[in-house]
Length: 76
Picture (cartoon, helix red, strand yellow):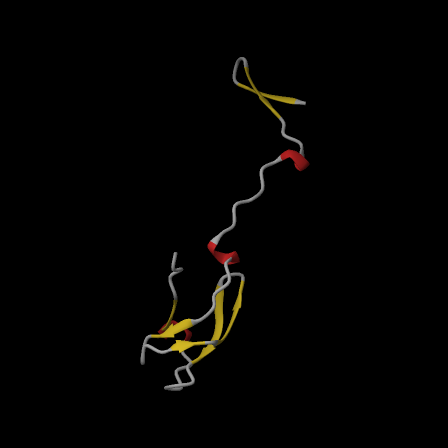
């Protein structure tokens, strides 16, 4: 089926199985560790859901405030 917009503009409908794959987002990448902003230590004890940090704890200084952690940049 074609959809018409305006006078003679027709846009072909793309079947669901032919649509391009959704590009991966930052939410889908796997984070290996966070960095504690208080003591600048890598932290491996954290929980994320859909790219959002839910919980984290720094084993060095005891920081549990998720706002005081930063995600690491990917090294390429």
